[in-house]
Length: 168
Picture 1 (cartoon, one colour):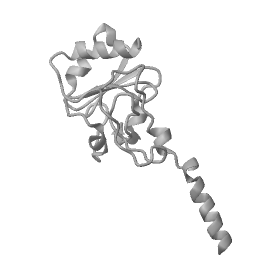
Picture 2 (picture 1 turned 90 degrees about the vertical axis):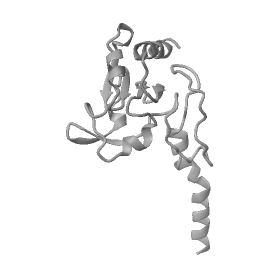
Picture 3 (picture 1 turned 180 degrees about the vertical axis):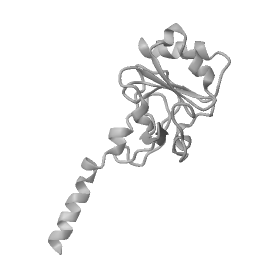
């Protein structure tokens, strides 16, 4: 029993080397190819082990299961590998139309309700934007920019965000 206790203690002391979700998934870029939002990341007791998904510029896009073409997939699987992806809420048509502008032509667009559905409510629970909001995601699955609600000047805002991300 003493040997087992010693092994259990040794494993517990090394746990941080194996249980690193905060370090692996919780990393957030503060500068570079993003539009800074000035918001703090959520507090984590142990930044190496604790992962708290959040929608912040520079943070990894939060995971959620969604439905696309009759299949359950992660929202992360819908992010384009070689280009920016704009994910909008169900009322985000203005953002989708803004992608038609010349500065936005290399942006893949996904509209909730048209391109994927959130039947389990997981995406709604983590997206932190309203039905008219939008999230610009980099190919590495990190958030470049987001708007929580619709705006009357979607094309200008989106073009500015794309320019900031493309030429940091």
